[in-house]
Length: 369
Image 1 (cartoon, one colour):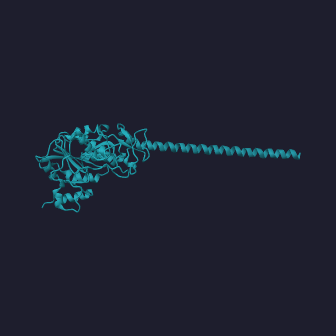
Image 2: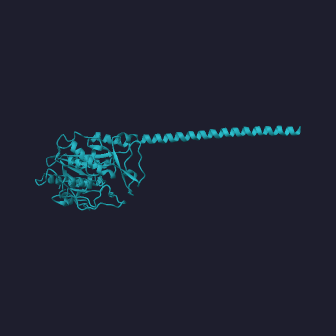
Image 3: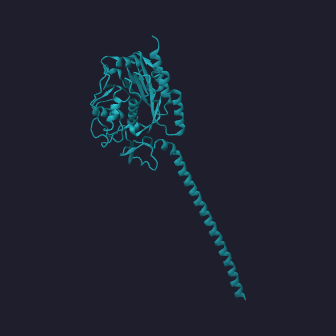
C-alpha cells in the first residue's frame, strides 16, 4: 500500500509539473508573438515615415534624370549629393556621386516668370542664390542695385534663381515670396554647391527661352556689389560688341585641381585636360544676350563638370567665342579691402561680406555729395 501511495503522489507531482511547463510555454509563445508584432509595426512605421518625408521631393523630381559619376572625393557631404529618385538609393560617401546632366532640358521650372521680359529690358541680372538666403535677396531687391528699374534711360531687371528647398514648409515660404515679389525662378535640381553648373545652365536656358529680347544679361552672385552706372556706361560704349561678347574677371591658364580633398576637385573622367580654357570668374560676368542660347546648345556636346564658371568657358571654347578683357580690368574686382567710398565709385563689381554690408555701402555710395 505504501508503495502504491508513493507512486500516486509522484504521479500527482508530475502532473502539476507538466501543467507548469505548459503554462510557461504558452506564456513564452505569447511574449514572442507580442515582440514580433511590435517589431513589425515599428518597421512599417519607419518605412512609412521615410516614404512620406521624401514624397514631396520625389514628386517634383520625377521628370529628372542623372548619371552616376564615380568619385572618391573626401570632402563631399550628404548635402552635396543629389537626392535619389523613387526606388533608388544614395551610395555611401566615397563610392559614388549622383550628378545630374547639366543640359537644362533635363529640368523644368517650378516657379517661373515667363512674362517678365515683356517690357524689353536692356539688361537682365540673374542671381543664383540658395533658397534659404532671404536676407540676401531682400538686400538686393529692396535696398540696393536690384531695386533699380532704369539706369541711364535703359530698363534693367533683376531675378533670382533657386533650386529645390528640401522641404514642404520651406517651399511654401518660397512660393509666398514669389507671389509677393514676382522675381523668383525655381527649377527642380537639388540646390547645392556641387550643382552650380546646373544652376548656371538653367539661368542660360531661362534667358534663351523667356527673355531673348534683352540686349545684355549678367550672371551675378548674391554677395556682390554692382555699380550700375559704371556697368551701363560699359555696355553703352560704342566699342562694346552686341554679339558674342562676354566680359568680367578673366582667368587664364588655370590648372585643373586633382586633389580629392579640395573643394574644387574635378576628376579626370569629367575633364581630362590639365588646364581650363580662358573663362570668367563666376562671381559676376556680363554677356550679350545672344550667347545663352548658343551656350545651352554647346552644353549638349560638353561633358558637365562641377566648376560652373570653367564649364561655361569650355562651352565658349567650343563655340569659338573668346572672353573679352574689360576696357578697365580694375573695375571687376574680387575684393577691395578696407572700405573707401572712392573705390566703390570706380568699380563695376566686387565681393562683399554680408547683406548688411551691401546695404551700408550702397547707402553711403548713393548719398549726396
